Length: 453
Image (cartoon, rainbow, N blue to C red; front, side, top):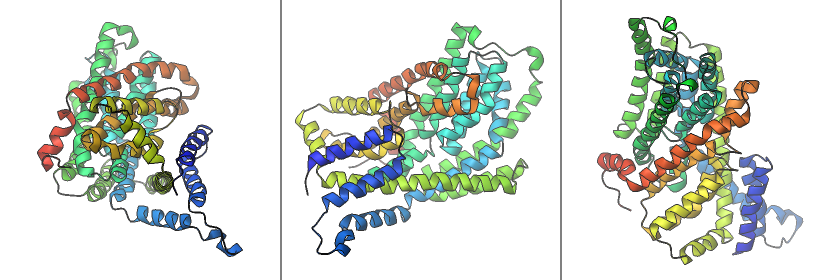
């Protein structure tokens, strides 16, 4: 039954309910079932036929499809790998070693924090975990060194968001499942944009401290250990974790393992690393398993809800209305890209990446062929843009993660002010990617051959 007015009402009501604080996954399921019951409604012959509605069959099928999706198997394994690495204090060792190794550079602690965030992101892919842990590790160290509060907070929040872009990003796995794209090509496409964004953050921090040294004073010489001790600690903390990450990502990009197989190898490797550092305790394994199960359940229910919601929205004619409206504007490809990215950027103010990715991005995916846009290039623009959902007030979740662990040490407004320059860097990186698409497309084309629609 086509009823586009009801579909638009459904979409608007979803946004209102999310802004009111209702859980996203269960809001999607409830609205999918509610509006789906209306969409498939047939007058019952008896009271028992009230539940004889096709929406219940659709919900059951979507749940089963999520459970048997091979791509999603990688999510709990990568999550477990990240949580084990976090609880083994490997990240803390790495930060302290990098901080000492970079002591001659302006803003050495900020640089160490950004590099640590980038490395931990490749081992975790969990924004909340990266920001929270670095808030506990790096912010007190920077505060004790008299770093400017806003500058320190901005570094941690911006660096923490790299986890949704740098492989093995959970977001990219979700995107691959939604858009039916190869997760291998997506991972390859994200490598250089992720490194580019991390490098821009580091360059900005160095330049800003060089211009205004008072925001990041150099460490006192008597606090710096001997050179041999510095590099011994760096070697002991950096090399094992780097080997694990390179092995996992290399096996994926080299075609030696699927993301799920590589994730299983990474989870096993993380446990070996934790054992090497004498941090593999039963309690830490329990905590890692619990956090992994909790996050995985959230992702799975998000998929069940989003697929049900999207199916009903499309059945009611919502996708057709939006597609006809966009195509009727007769936009050039670049105008279409600018419009979509502007919409996603604005949606990042009130919404998180998961709602944007699961509900709104699929609306535009079918139009890519009409405008001749490479879906992997589009995916990388979206991935960069979704960084802004963590950095844009008032729903900048990275700011709330940091505020949650720092409590009264800093005001939320100060964190927001520290985020603004990095928000500008993300937008600048999107412009660079648009001007030079090869940043995203060269590596997947080199590894897997030129993409053919």
